[in-house]
Image (tube, rainbow, N blue to C red; front, top):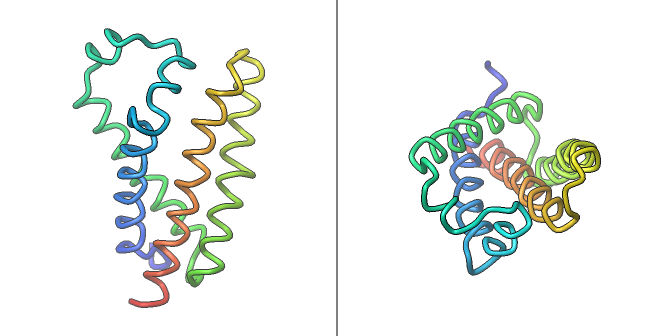
Length: 134
């Protein structure tokens, strides 16, 4: 627990949560994601959004904290590079396995895996920045 930069992890989790709000907004990938996921407007409107956002926020914080423990005292450049590598090499590659077996579309994969690749890049940047400046 001593190696976790809590400030960097919390800031990274908040940044990733904000990224998700933009990434999945109708102005960016929201409509394309909705169509690729097979969700209609009624599905979105009837979803329990409070619970959904709570789960997303908690999961983002857990992922950022675990990544901070993994990353240790790395600086900004190394942290950002490791974050991008983890996002593409671990998370997106793992999604690819599931999406291949589940016969999900390439569009859905690119939207979801792309978000998580950028998410982990943000974690690495925020944690690395906190390690450097705090």
